[in-house]
Image (cartoon, rainbow, N blue to C red; front, side):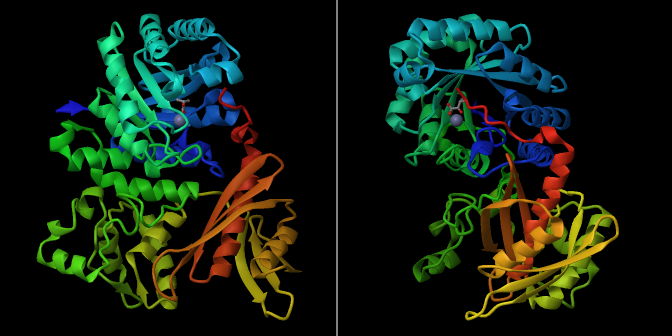
Length: 515
Ligand code: KIV
Ligand code: ZN
């Protein structure tokens, strides 16, 4: 069976999603999970964008050993050198070079003629050869490029020394037939095409990213690029879990497979959602909360008689285990440990103890602790940020006829305690005004979202915020059975990250654009 290589770009194209800003530790965490997921290639970032991006790629390259690590570069010497610097500790480095080829991009963005595009790309690939043996060349906006010119560009890239040629549908404009035909034509017409791998990179503007990637596979693509949960620029990229599961479930049709460890899909999806703050819609294919839920009576009846009546894949395949053990306030350490094993967590003794203390605290406030609650507790502190401020006390006065006010008391890292009160337009606004007074940080709340972790009135609430100070954006997360407490925790988490980020001033992305 033909192997399809999976090129994951969650850390590059995925990180270009509006509002997403991962720090180095979070990038490494995702990189390590992608390694467990068994993707072949990981695009870790765009090193020339900023020293922070370079440091992020470097950190992923040092940590991840069982995947090719890739850095993105425009067709410029400075960008190529930045990738070379960022990947010097990678076990298996690869450069991803790109230049736009479509008439629209040539005329308005690059102001270059066809022959200039060919010359610039060729020069960049040849220059890159000094540093890299593996080079992927992307003809940006290939989907809207004249097919004859794309044949010429691909032939040039092969002659110049590219090892992979990528055909991006940069703006998500293609239909599956059109996109598949591009691959067919390149396979038929480009001399030396058998020497390289052809790659598909699709965007989801018209909701066809996965269908287009699969059409490319049917027409000879060797590699598919995409992201976990399909996150990415605008409407996002092809979701790699969808491609992997389509090839698995419809093996007889596609006659192709990936090396992905399917059982790691669910965990990868949760991690990316948690660290990016991008919530997965309930109806999302494969990884949405409802993807394996059967609501209608007829479906439930069918499922009880024979699962395959309505289920084409098993939740087990993607690592979504239904655990039978129900925990509550009388559950002991032993049952808790069993549950962690059931849910697939491998934690140290110290981590189990810390999680157990949090579980006991939660069980006091909540009758039944659901699997989702336990996952949320464990994942709350996945990334340890040094805590300058820890929430100690929160008190809120709200009435629909009065001005809401809040008092916040925090413990400070140096051992002190600080307390402030403030009014606001609403309870959350009052809390955030009080925190601003305590921390004396001048920040702007760019984004606030809240979701329920499990079901019921006593469900845990999870808050995600994005704070901005000058050009620096940070995220923060907080969970609690009380949404006001979760809101305060998320805000303080973001402030703590901001303070940490100031200590490493290279960590924010600059506004270099991909041109
Ligand atoms: O969509 C696109 O064209 C890209 C390139 C940089 C490959 O992401
Ligand atoms: Zn893209």
